[in-house]
Length: 245
Image 1 (tube, rainbow, N blue to C red):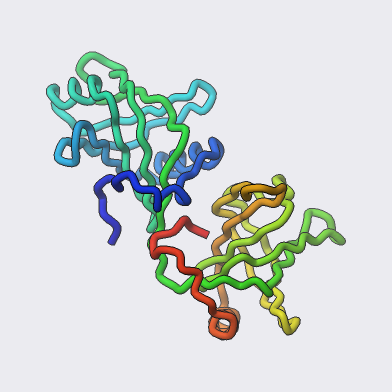
Image 2: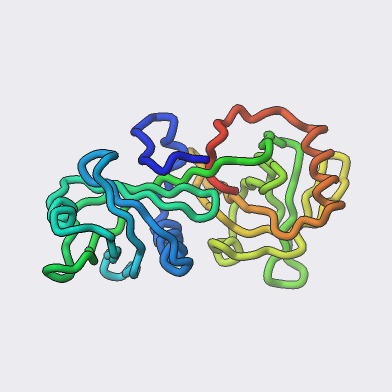
């Protein structure tokens, strides 16, 4: 299991930082909608309060949280120069730093916080991820004759990472893409359904990277992908904890 405590600052974690406002707001709203708990650390790892996300106001740049904390804790949270909030969505660990907690009422435990500008997103992978430079993925467009072909950067039994110019309306966060096809170097096709989990612009070019997870893999396709991964497996050298998709 991943630690529930804040990850210490490290250059190795820079690749897992999400700065897309859309993704940050989406993640916080998932925590709210799924009634998931978050832990707010103030001062150090031994001073913390558990609570929930009440609301996310993107327009006013506000996050509203409710904490289980006494009067001394409320005062400490409001006075803290830095607050670290940690939460989990399934196996994905989310962590961000904020400050300036403002109590909404005099004696209540609800606070108003500014939305973070960046968020750490980590996921412990259960399957090997390999680089696959010879694979392509074909994604149907909105029109009957449209098809987007992207290069496969890496692949696991949990998901796939693609590179290419992206249609942002098609590759929207959390969108499910049906009838996609992974094409091997021999021309073999694997029919898969993808869910968009992460998008980032690649350094030094116009291309973008999109991370997707597989949805409802059939046993036959899973076996085929396992054989494909074994045939092209060149371990990517990435750490075990990696952004989803």
